Amino acid sequence: MKSLEAKPQHNNVRSRSELKAFQQKMLEMLYRPLSPDWKSRKKTDEGISVVKIAEGLIKPNDRLTSFERLEIYNRCYWFRVLDSLYDDFPGLLALLGNRKFLKLITAYLIRYPSESFTLRNLGSRLESFLCEEPEYASPLQEIALDMVRFEWAQIIAFDEIAREPISPKDIQKRDPEKLRIGLQPYLALLELNHAVDRYLIAVKNQEFDGLRKEASNTSNAAPEGKNHRRRLSLPKRERVWLAVHRYDNMLYYKRLEPAAFTLLKELGKGTPLEMACGKAIKRDGSAKQKGVLKADAFQEKLQGWFAEWSSLRWLTLPSPKK
Amino acid sequence: MPANEFNGFTDYGIGIGLRVPHYRHILAEKPLVDWFEIISENFMVEGGRPLEVLDQILEQYRVVQHGVAMYFGSADRLNREHLKRLKRLVKKTKTPWLSDHLCWGSVDGRYTHDLLPMPYTFAAAKVTADRIRQARDYLEVPICVENVSSYAEYHASEMTEWEFLSEVVEAADCGILMDVNNIYVSSENHGFDPYEYLNNIPHHRVGQIHIAGHSKFEKYTLDTHDHPVLDPVWKMYAHLLKKTGPTATLLEWDDSIPSFEEVHREALKANLFHKAKTPAASSGATR
Image (cartoon, rainbow over all chains, first blue to last red):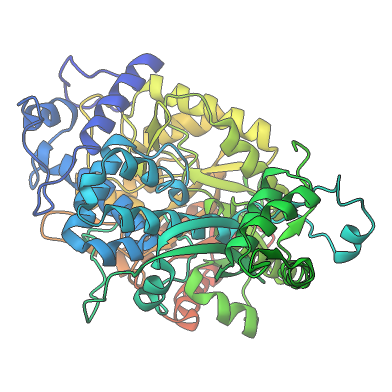
């Protein structure tokens, strides 16, 4: 076995536990945020020299210091994760602008680093983070929160499991008092306070193909925000009931009437059909005119909804848990 | 060779990586391609378009799985959820072998999504080999580990990279996915002779070869997969084939991806070297 030059006595890796300690140290270094000009910072928050830490771990060569070699990995880490979130949240990026978006997602990744083998899940806790730290999106925190929920729902809708849809026949055969209907796991129902759906249509155009691209190459380029040619008007403040779903493996979102939204929400919770319809009818404006409940009008509407939802394959048998 | 226990005794030729910008072309035109390599993690999902595309590809083509997130060299226990999903995909694709990298990338359940070089020590080799064995036993498919390109060397290392690779694959009794471009990139960054690397690995364990392009910067060379294969890499490839015999070869092109035809044309250049007389080929290799 060829012997290499003498190594410092620290940072040895002679056991599993030393390997783990070594990897923990490296991870800590890679997770350190970059400076605004995309370089590694030379001191930790506690004022410890990263240059010294790098020298203890990594050999220099004739062109690069230990710190510069560590910096390559530090940059690659950040470029990869930031790129992924730029791709997944184009609406949030357009809303906040590049600088604010970058600040937000950097802070997010420091608190919630990836705990999944796939970058697909990287943004899964962004909504929670925004609730905890709304000032990162200030003064647009409410719109930003709507946008994050909407964009995360699209990630779910894109590749979450599809269950066998039920047919209208299945519904007709059963007692509505007891009948429970499930919803596709990929269908997300969102109650929003801003028209972020319309805003995103304006932002995205063809940019987003939605297909994740994990690969084994290395990128040396900092992520870039898309240059939106014109400043878009902010999403209008309005109550929006939205279904985010896929059909024939294409992603869609559809505005719903409040009563339809209520009905779907209740079905999703496992409420029996009749009771769910009862809650929906209370929500329905057209069913009440001059204080009189117009059951026929609502019945007609209900049939239309179920026909549509069946054709969209949203309705399934309930999951075994319910 | 080329058919050996590490590539499931198959006789695959030149393949290319299945990449999103080519989906439409491949599905519509059905070009003649010996096999496609898929990135496992892109298809370890529950439904939707990725699986629909994969089903269509599987109807027409042979597919081999290549992973980027197994992190055989991580000190943690193997991630069971990851393995379960991977096995589901293995059953679906019927991949004759499966590859992932000789690297680490996560610790304590936190991920870097990068292929980080190992400290080349005996202890690290043992941990890594144990994990490869466990994964293979669970997945029930031969495993080939791929050497990564690297930009740093650790003080902790006790041996060279090729010694470490040999130590791991012998201990795990697994195959090698020899990435020739990665050897070249690392040799440029660390100043070793890439041919010393190529000459000193257990050649009978090579189940697959990767070729790719790279980018040279002022102070280092980066494994960018965004160019055609460069001449020094082709020369190394030819040299390796002399040792291994014709071996399943895959061109990786992951960034600035040109048309399908261009990528395929570049990959098929490898045939020139396969057709050249090699010791293994002339002594009755099955190709």
